[in-house]
Length: 129
Image (cartoon, rainbow, N blue to C red; front, side, top):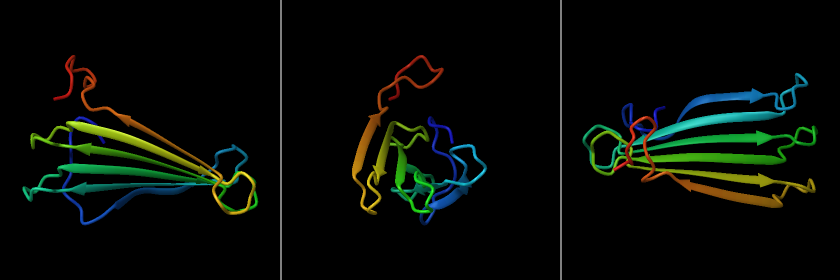
């Protein structure tokens, strides 16, 4: 999905666009799972999305025992604040949860947030409005 445009029609909720197991270690055995969802929200009722939320969730079996030991959630929120069809505000948040000692309770949580509002749009030579 292009970050400079809000495309598609509004949805009633998150739509799964990708959902599959992954082999993160390269041994031929799935040890992770990726789900990507997109939600298009029409705030003003004009039929075009004003907010697009793209969420990628990756779960990982780090110990090989079949349990989920780590989760990373990356969410990108794009907002069209002036109704011109271009994302004026983009925020990316990544949250990582890891169960280090195997007791089923996350021990490490890391949250990173990047606000790309006001950064130049790729190839435009100008800052986002």
